[in-house]
Length: 180
Image (cartoon, rainbow, N blue to C red; front, side, top):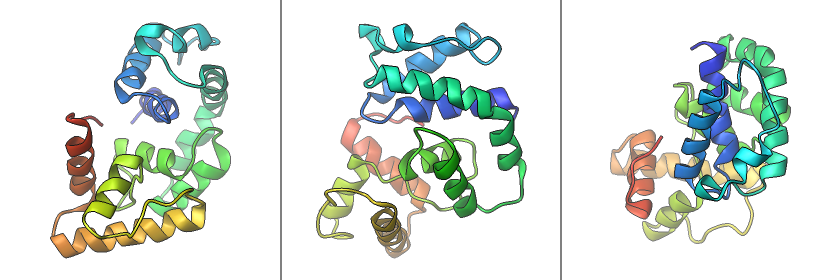
């Protein structure tokens, strides 16, 4: 995948936390139309538009510019033979705005997640519903994320549904949508 493709997937994952996925998708479409990758700009006004509002638009606009500036390093790292776990750790440590969930989401969207779990509220609710975990954690530290991720992997094996498919199933059951 060329760096521009990586960038727009990364932009999507930077926009989704605490914002609607449909809004993040719309914003990425607008960033593409404005050729953000070729000519970056402060996207605050774009992110705060009511029709596709992105929470924390000031911070996320800064993250977009920072990610753009790092794109060559990010692309080089993604082109390495590193496994998904190492790539996620690198992304979380080096790309502002990416936590464990967002980094995993990005890796899944570019086809590099190799069994890592995207633990959002939709997934966590279903893990509780089906007894894989007792309760939704009040916070997801790195350590807690890894523990819950392992329980999700075990549940996936137990029910015989691949993790990525189970993730999509849980997400669509909660939202009524199928999205990336």
